[in-house]
Amino acid sequence: MTTVAAPDPEDQAFRIWLRILAERLTTDPEGALSSQGVLVFLWATFVENGAMPPLYFAALIGAHRQAHAQRTVTALLQQVHAETGRRLDVPVRYSPPTERDPEGVVRIGHDVVQGVDLGDIHAEAAEDCSAFSRTGTASSGRSAPTIESGCTPRARCPALSGCAR
Image 1 (cartoon, rainbow, N blue to C red):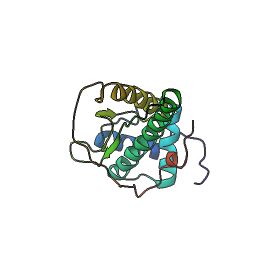
Image 2 (image 1 turned 30 degrees about the horizontal axis):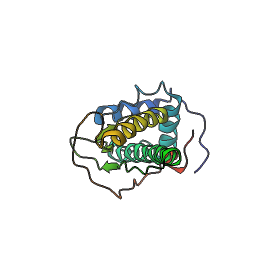
Image 3 (image 1 turned 90 degrees about the vertical axis):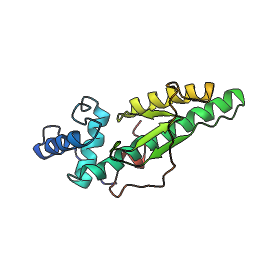
């Protein structure tokens, strides 16, 4: 991964790209800019890939959520096993983008991960993992079919080379 300059949230091309993403995706990237982690993720993605089309960026958001949700769930399950001796299985699944869900969907158990900021993803993953491990179902009680996907985005996601936290 190349070194990326400090984020410039006022860069006009960057702002135009964020508006285009907000019009086409369910996540509002401009609204999430208050998070330094989201700003760094979006800026690095923009610098490394340019103003990529929303469909390509959607694959990165899905991969970003899936990678960080999986890391959190794995760490939590290892901690549970170390402290209790119990081995739990909490699935983290990714469904590719569809017309209805243009970013794809990452689920822990049956609950959808919606965060972009690493802290939000980690908190959602911990809550969903806890609920799923207690009941075998997620806290919302939703049950939607999901599929495992080997989908990898074509563009580079700066966050997937290592967690910044």
